[in-house]
Image 1: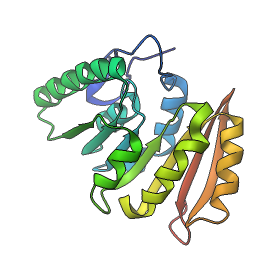
Image 2: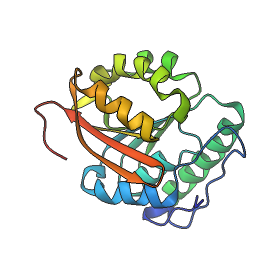
Image 3: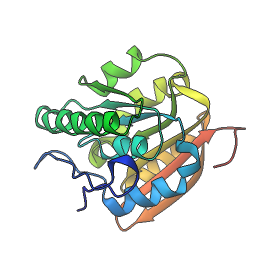
Image 4: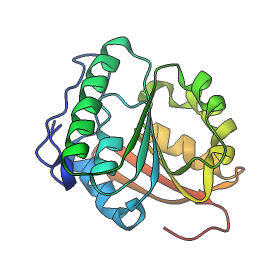
Length: 198
């Protein structure tokens, strides 16, 4: 699985990742999704939930986002994530990029209520597939508050998770715009109902 960045000021950077307990978003999936939303990334404020190595948030800032907040509570993963963010910060300074990188090391349910209203333009969640439905209640509770008006929410899951999210959105303020599948990986894109199409 590729953990090397290929675009932006972090191009060529190899990300460190925990050997167990995380499932980094593959380079193929990450690149495909980022390419599809490239026009949204300029100066975007990004939330990378269940960050693991931080690949998604790091690629977003490498491609033009102005800030990224990473949420990860796994002890081993946090060590690697801190190292990755230190390297991003070094490269940003060399490239004279003014970035804001934040790391939140508490569980998702504890972290989200502490974040400010309308803080994000792009929110990416990649929870362990087996517990997506359990974790989603805490996420959905805060989603409308944290996302800016034209925000895009992206969730990576397996097929069962994609079906769960499809059902969830029917009675939520968030409308499923599209779902993409990459083998066993499914990626769901949501926007506020009545918002701009992706």
